[in-house]
Image 1 (cartoon, chains in turn blue, cyan):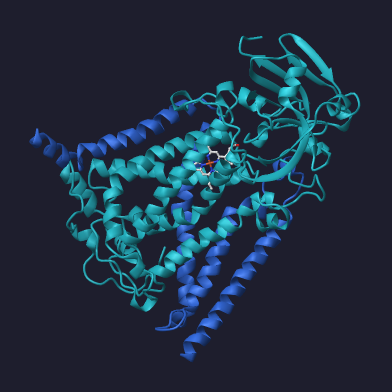
Image 2 (cartoon, rainbow over the protein chains, first blue to last red):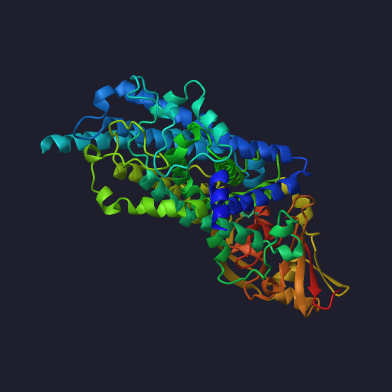
Length: 157
Length: 460
Ligand code: HEM
C-alpha cells in the first residue's frame, strides 16, 4: 500500500490528494463549460475569461513593470537616497493610484456604453474624465507636498 | 517586467538544473521533464534574473493571501444571496436554470429592511476594495509564470492549468462586475449567466488552491513578525530567505520601498477605492463622494431628485399611459377590481421610511406613502395568499413584472406607493404607483404598476 502511494507520488509528482483536488476544480469548470457551450455567446465568455488572465499577465503587468523601470532610470540615485524620503515613491504612489482608478472606472472615464448608461440613469458620463484628471492632479499634489514636508523634517533632524 | 542590464552573476540556475530542497522532483517520464528543463527557450535565464524586487517572498504573498482568504468568500456568499433575493422559486432569478448549482430555496425575509442594502452593498463595495489586493497578490507571484521549466511533472501541469481558472476566474468576475455597475455591457454576453457561472468556476479553483497552499501560507505568515515589519524602514529592509517555491528573487536588488511601505500602499489603494464607493449609499452631499461612479450623482433636486435605475423613456412608458385613464387592476380567484388613482388615495394611507437598494450595489433611503399591499389584497377578497404577481405598464424588459412572496405581500411596510417624500411620484420613479417592499431588491420594486394578481395557496 505504502509502496503504491510512493510510486504514484513519484510518477505523478504529488500525493493522490493533490490530483483529487484538481479533478474537483476541473469538474466544476468542465461542467459549466459544457452547460454554456450551447449558448450563442459562449465563445465570447471564454475569450473574456482567458483574455482577462492574458491581458493581466502579458499586457498590464509588463506595462506597469516597464513604466516603473523607466521611472527608476529617470530618477537615478536621486530617486532612492540612502536616507530620507524616496522621491521615487512619491511619484510611484500617485501614479499607481491614478492608474488603478482609471482601470476600475474606465467605462465612465472613456464614456463607454453610453446608451445603456442613459437608459439606466437618465444622465450622460461627461463629468467623469475631468473628475479623474482632477483626482490625479490632487494625488500628485498631495504626494509632492508630503515629499517636501518629509524632506524638511529629515533635514531638520 | 523589470529590465536589468548588468551581466549575470554566477551560473544560470535554469540551465544547471539545480533543485533546491523542497522543490518538486521530476515526475514520470523523468527524462522528458529533464529534457524540457535543460532546453529553455532563449532568454528564459535572463527573464529569471530580471526579477529584482527584494520584497517578493512567502511572507508578503501570505499576507495578501490571508486577506483574500477572508474577503473573497464574503464576496461570493453575498453574491449568492443576491441571487436568492430574486426569489428563484418563482423562476425569476437569473440565470434561470442553473442545474446542479441550484441553491437551497427559502423565502427572502423582509426584516431587517436594510438586509439587501447590506448584502449587495457589501458585495459590490468589498469586491471593489479587494481589487488592489488581488493585483498585489498576483504581482507577488507573477515571476512564477515565467519559470523554466514550466512544469516538472503531470501534477504541476494540472496545477498550473487550475491557476488559469483561478486567475481568469477572479479577473473575469471583477471585470464583468465592474462593467455591470457602470452600465457598460461591452462584453456582449448575458451578465447574469456569465457572472453566476464564472463565480462557481472561480470558487472551485479557489477551494483547490487554498487546500493546496494553506500550509505554505501558514508557514509564510509565521516566518516574520508583522509588528516588526511595521517598524522596519526602507534602508533596513532585507529580502526574505530563499524559499522552496522560489518566490524570493534569485538576485534581489536594493530595496526601494519597505515592506511596511508596500503594505501601506496596497491597503491605501483599497481604502481609496472604498472611499470612492461608499457614497453610493449615502444621502445629500455625501453621495457625491462616489466621484467616479454613476450613483454618486443626484439626477435632480427636490423630493424626487434621488437616482433612478430605469427612466420612463427607456421603459417606453409615456405620460399618456399614466394619465386620468390609468386604472390598477387587482385580481384574485377570477375576480377583478379596477381602481383609479383617486380611489387608491381614498384608501388608508401609510407612510414608511425604507431603503431602496439596487442590485448594482447602490441604495437610498426615502419616505414612501401609499396603500398597504395587504389592504389591496383584501379589496379583491384574496385570502390564503401564496404570492402576488405584479405587472408594469412597461412593455419589454426583464423587470416589467415580478412575483412577490407571501411574506412580502403581507408585511405592514409593503406598499403600493403613490407618493415619495410628501409629493406625488415622478414619472421616472414610477408614477402613478410603484411597489416598495422592505429588503426587496430595487428591480423587483416594480414601477408604473398596472396590475396585481394575488395567488392563493389553493391555486387560482
Ligand atoms: C469588483 C468585483 C465585483 C463586482 C463589482 C460585482 C458586482 C455584482 C453585481 C452588480 C451583481 C448583481 C447582479 C444582478 O443581480 O443584477 C453581482 C452578483 C453576483 N456576484 Fe458579483 N461582483 C464582483 C465580484 C464577484 C466575485 C469575485 C464573485 C465570486 C466570488 C462574485 C459572485 C457573484 C454572484 C454569485 C452573484 C449572483 C449572480 C446573479 O445574480 O446572477 N462577484 N455581482
